[in-house]
Length: 351
Image (cartoon, rainbow, N blue to C red; front, side, top):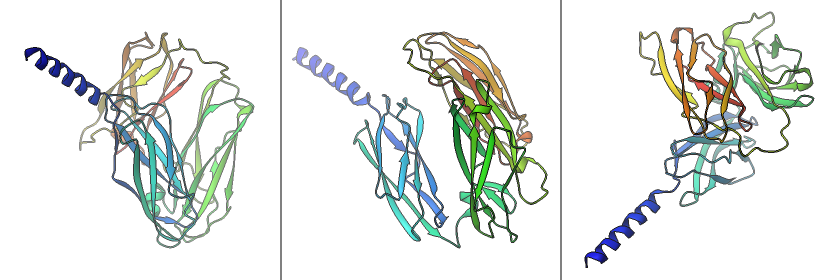
C-alpha cells in the first residue's frame, strides 16, 4: 500500500507540473471601445495581450468577423510575464453603431480567444480628443512619430498620420524643417472645420548614406507663418540596416526586462529612477554599440556595454518630470549587434 501511495504521489506531482507548464493568454481589457469615430477614417485598436503562463505564447493567426476590419500582429513568441499587442484597423465606411469580433488563435487553451470591438461611426459627433491625442490647439493629430524601421539604402518608404481641423478657418497641413530625404503630401490639401487630412510622408533612403540611426525634429505648422515649438514637434527617425543574406545561429540576442516605464509622478518629487535589466539570450557576446536619448528630461547610465551569453547588465534611467513636454513620450534607443534586433527601444510614459 505504501508503494502504491508513493506512485500516486509521484504521478500527481508530474501531472501538476505538466498542467502548470503552459502558456496562458489574458487580455488587459474585456473589450475595446472605439468611442465615436469619424466616417470613412480608419481607426486602430491595440489589443493588449499578456502571457501569464509558464511557457512562451505563440499567436498563430488572427481573424475578424468581417472584411471591414484588418488585423496585424507579431508572431514572435511572448515569454512568460511579457506582453504583446494585436492591432486591428476598422475602415469606418458604415455609419452608426458597430460590434465586431476578433478571434486570436494561439497555443494557449482553449486555443481560440474571442475579443469584442465596439463603437460608433458619425460625421458630426466623433470623439476627436481620444482619436487625435496630439493637442496643438485648433489642430490635433493622431500621431507625432515618423518612424522608418529596417531601411535599406536606395529604396523608398512611406508612413502617414492624420490631422483634424477643429478651428473655424480652413487649414492646410505644412511640415517645416523637413530634411532632404523626406517629402510629403496632404490629402485633401485644405480642410474645413471637423474635416480630416491624411498626411503621407515619403522617405528616399538613397539620401541616407550612414548605417544606423538618423533622427531629426520636424514641425507641423498650425497656421501660415507659425513658428516651431514643442507642441508641434514631430519625431522623425530612420534606421538603416545592411542586407542580411543568412541567419547566424551563434549570434547574440537581446532581451529587456521591460520596454516601457511610467513613473508614479508624485507631487513635488523632482526625479524618478528605474532599473532595466538587459540580458543576452544568444550564443556570442552582445555589444551595445550606441545608447541614445533624445530628450533632456531623461538621463541614462549603463553598467556594461558588453554582455556575455546568458548574462545580464543594468540600465539605470532617471526622469526629471519638470522637463517633460506635453506631446512626447521620451525614448531610449539601444543599438546592438543582435542581427534580428539591431535597434531596441524603451519608452518612458509621460504623466
